[in-house]
Image (cartoon, rainbow, N blue to C red; front, side):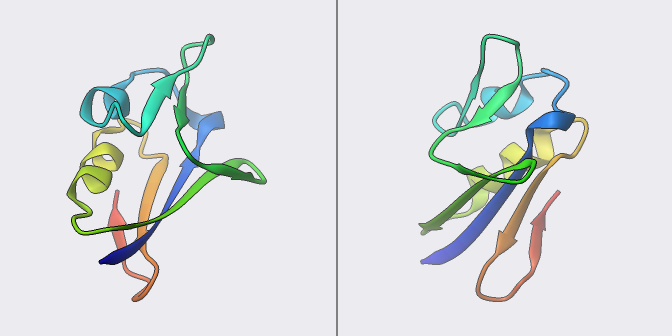
Length: 84
């Protein structure tokens, strides 16, 4: 299992919905056309999701799909930034 921290800056969202297209189980558009990171909590301007997973691929792909690169995926155990 890999422990991940996903940091999403909703203020920077332009509503491209790329993250939703790649990972609709984790991202959903709100009524203003900006994405929300489902299951997250708010810290300052960020939506934060801390999760354990067998495969971080979908989280990394969702972050890399964002055209404005406002989603960061971090391996909590090593500190390595996996995306963007």
